[in-house]
Length: 315
Image 1 (cartoon, rainbow, N blue to C red):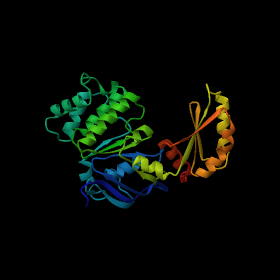
Image 2: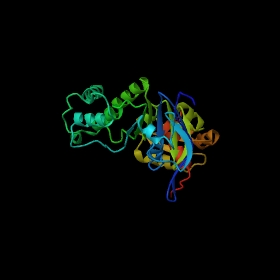
Image 3: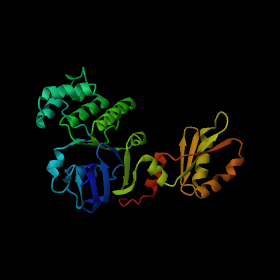
Image 4: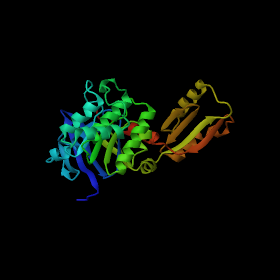
């Protein structure tokens, strides 16, 4: 067994009734890595995370998490994992410090008061120790939940959409702490909808309808998409919104165009067939009011394209 591997699973499958939530999923996550897990709502991300940490038993497939079999050693896995759920799960009627001390005692951490004080200081919660958890804003609740997860000093941190509904500053501060934890040796698997967060990960995986569609470093996933992209913008001061929308509709109907996305006063036009894209845009080069600029596809372009082409087996 490779000591550098934190998670390695193959053929993972989970079905609820006639509904296949995860189908033949394979993942490899290295230790000290921040691994982004992406996909639309209902894609199977949460179910996968729960199978990895021993909360659900897969119907098929096998693998290990932190060196333990996910089927037969779930208890050992759970003892080494910090799991932060989508919903804030601490006690709203206890203070920040009381919540942290309770979690410390629950996990048998030595000197619970000292451990809680350390977490408060690390996550910038000084001055809020006596505040009720239920009175915290979303960003502060997120910090508290993260503090509770790392109190037992886990080897693996599983974060299920941890920054949903949190303001940009709080998200950035959260990610700074995640990178600091990874630098100290913690492995992190995080599910997210935000493309800027995905780009902060060392590697990413994208699933839709229970199927793995892409994985690797961000630049590898973008390169493997085969997308060609051109940005269209109006010369001069700009153009009316209606004209931009009309141009977008025209391009969406053109052969060889896979995606048209507006970004302010620009249109992002993409295709998996570079020659067809060039042919579709050729008539626009003669227009003096338009500027056509070759561009690189974004991670968002890639994921939208993957989602559009993924078979919806739940419709």
